Image 1 (cartoon, rainbow, N blue to C red):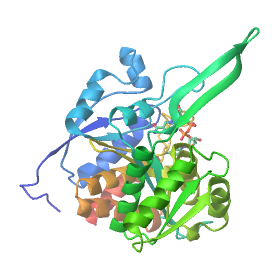
Image 2 (cartoon, rainbow, N blue to C red; image 1 turned 90 degrees about the vertical axis):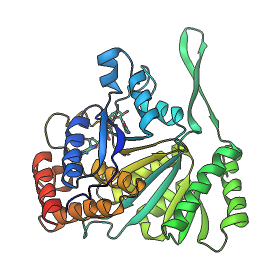
Image 3 (cartoon, rainbow, N blue to C red; image 1 turned 135 degrees about the vertical axis):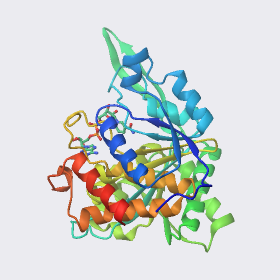
Image 4 (cartoon, rainbow, N blue to C red; image 1 turned 60 degrees about the horizontal axis):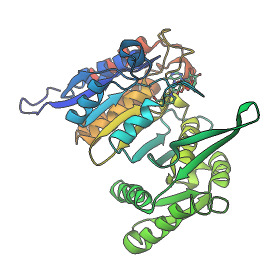
Length: 348
Ligand code: NAI
């Protein structure tokens, strides 16, 4: 299908990222090129790549680019555990106030342990225990004798995230939304989120979908026993991070899980997974999570037809052509999967 001549170009920032980033970004660009997606990419660096190139995990040029385009597709960025620099992902979310993290999980390969899963996790992205207010207290000669962290959730921050989630539920026809919390123990920190959600539902959304609440630990167990009882989960930062990996596991692993970070001023699309250093450079990474993130980006830009074509081609490549990477039980390389997908897009 040829792009109508009048289709406006869309400036967008591209951050290939670390580890398998370059490999899965190349694969995703091949798919977007085959779709003739109208993005004009501005390629920038961040994460370990930024540290190596300029000593900065989030260089000013990268920030300026996103400030200009307000739209980015991003590969995974490496963050050292324990010490070292602060996560560039967290900093990007803070810089552009990307308060909502949208993580859909849908079964694409039928017949697995959990068939026909179709769930969305909406995670608060800026508050909670991720704000980085942490410190150690020294006792005697042990500088790390005590570790402390402060979590902050605000009424305003909770409300704007819950409003985003509830609007998304209405827009996409979700029947049930479940607020996940731990207000029995962290009565203030997660109680404020629960209380705000219940109040908002009563005031503005009652009757548009069913609202349910569940405690995080019970939610984890219920997701594994019967994930079909849920439709959309909305929760605070840390719980959302953990639950979105859990639901990714229900639909075939991290290689199948895309994510969108959305704020008032910008949107950044990425895979849920990290830089996978154990398989980087081997040409075997599964690029589907980033491709599905690109489909979310197309939706965000109202290019729904191209988004649907991309999702359909992924489905056909996996299920009709049976071309799958190793993490999905197949033997295809990233390049072989991409080649098969591009043929499907061109011939579909
Ligand atoms: P990871 O998600 O990179 O890898 C976990 C396991 O899943 C590994 O065995 C890996 O090989 C496998 N895996 C991940 N993506 C895959 C793919 N597309 N195809 C096939 N297998 C895949 O998590 P890990 O190892 O804990 O983190 C590595 C680095 O990534 C860390 O520095 C971490 O901070 C960073 N990270 C970055 C994220 C981001 O940029 N959004 C998100 C999560 C972690």
